[in-house]
Length: 404
Image (cartoon, rainbow, N blue to C red; front, side, top):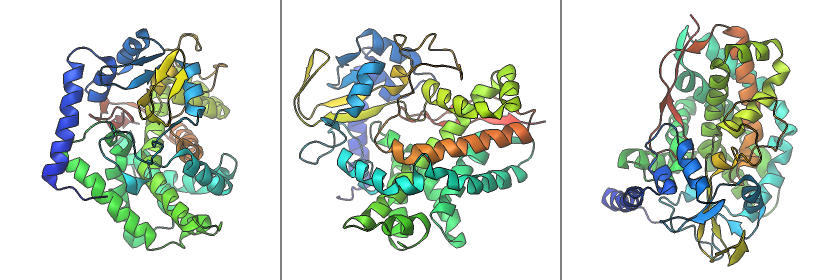
């Protein structure tokens, strides 16, 4: 991919940002979602829902808000992250090929099969001890006041990944810096970032790719490469890059959002502390109520007739996952956080979620258990600050807590 100058990169992002801003001026809900200027996008999701479960917005994108239809689309091979000719959706702002975010369904399925014995829902349990050690060490070094995201959740995700990838001790500070810079990778594909963080993101991807490609035999990289086959080495690199580019932010957001849901209700917090077996249900309800990935952009690989609509080949279709997961046709009282729900499982975005979700859920369970056990008086100690220009991740920039 051609390396853009700062002028070219800035101009491209300004053009897309200006288009989103202009369309948003006329009240288009999806354009306003992409602006990402509000701490709570759910009212915008409801405005989009009011336009129908599948509708075309003023930007030309098809927008899906209904749960059943979203589940159907996410499973439909006619919709993918790449067009039939291999190109990515035209609306993408940055083609982050080094992050492997644009892998098509076939490539993701190959990765899933190759990594299932290492990172699948059952296999991931072998990494619990590593997560417990990293989380425990982090809590040992914290005082009574700290930032739940910056001081605990993100370092936990980075530390566990560094262990699994066997990153040498001397390289870990740089590894942590690069992973942190990748926090807006998913957002950057649909929402133009400011020039400095966009350039930092591109640089981090280049350096991490070089770092991983230079030691194909270390840790998880070596284990994936050892599975054999023509694309084993490339798949090992793709696994590492996807875990760094999406797994760290996914884990950090899941830990923070689940912890905040417990801290917001002392009775719920105390009930979960008394019965830690409820933690998986808390995590699943967090994935429904406030997921780490709020929307997922796909492209039609061919002309598609669905839900009474004709979607032309190469058209972008966006699944508003956070809206679908609060579909009142499926979930009773969808705004209420209820770990005891017995309705449908929460939808999660992107084929890559099967790669990162089991490890993220394991780390969230470990993190919540330790926070509840070791800091029983933990509470929020100031306003939550959400990162701007983060319509996909709705990532937390600051969440002060205290155990005093």
